[in-house]
Amino acid sequence: MPHDPSADRARDVALPARSAPGRASVPFVLFLLGFLVLYLLAVCTPIGQRIENAVLSSENGSKPAWIHEFSGAYSATGPTLPPLGELALPTAAVGLLVLVLLTLVRRCWWQGAAAVCVAGAAIGAAEVLGQVLPRPDLVNAPVYFVEPSFPSGHAAVASALVVAALFAVPERLRPWLLVVGAAWLAMVAGAVQATLHHRPSDVVGSTLLVCIAYRLALWLRPTVAPTFAARPATVAAASACAVVGAVIGGSRSDSLGQSAVFAAVAVGCAALAWLAVKDQVVTRAQSD
Image 1 (cartoon, rainbow, N blue to C red):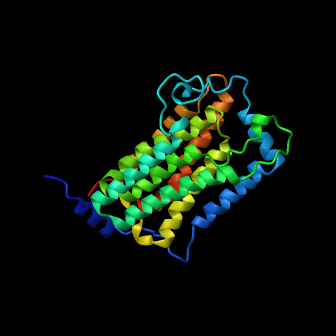
Image 2 (cartoon, rainbow, N blue to C red):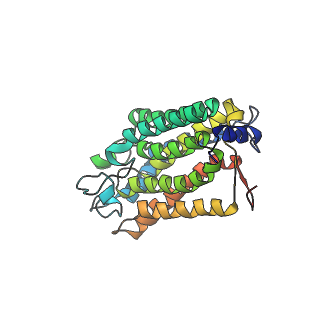
Image 3 (tube, helix red, strand yellow):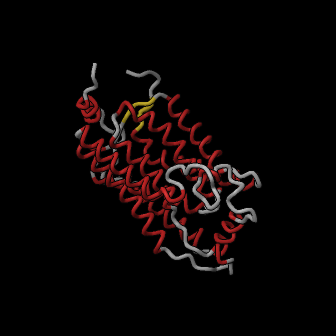
């Protein structure tokens, strides 16, 4: 029997958020506070700069990164994995177009608008803030450590498209998006660190921007909350995929310590995204 898009729309309406955020509770403010504190501590203090400069130090550049050949970095020979390298903006454009098409096909106007606005706002904010937020040189660092990079635009593209897509895809596909999206988000967050293009605070900051945009959308219009049911095994699979993606993206062959830090931060980014969306995930042992 052919699938009726109206059935998905009906389920979206019939299944309200279990704990939809209201105007009396504004959790996006907590993510905003986290973003500001992270920037001030990691970027604007000597100890924060020293720690991140030490984590990023390497005489071998990006080549030891496991994902180097697919990162679009200089001397890489393999195909570039989106949104790495020069594919950040093209990936964002294609992702936004897909969200618009999903909105038109499913006729889920408010949820589609939320998806496009969340993705566009988070990606745009990351690009703008990456240009305007200063990185003062407080520790007399080498010139390649002074260039501003907070937050990461590449990591923002991956996390924004995954989180925003929850609004637009049919309810029955959201658990699968949770699994695949966790792997992609964590891999990208790990890769931009392992190739030494971004500091740990950069990828965490971009993920926080996505969380702010998502929770702000729910606060402004709680009825668009993309609530869906998922088995505990699905949530566990998403967690496992995030770890695998983080290890693949964040590992380097020349430093176990750096690999552990980069992968752990990448998993932390996936955990932040989960923290933002978990109120809309109703776990159950069996599908109805």
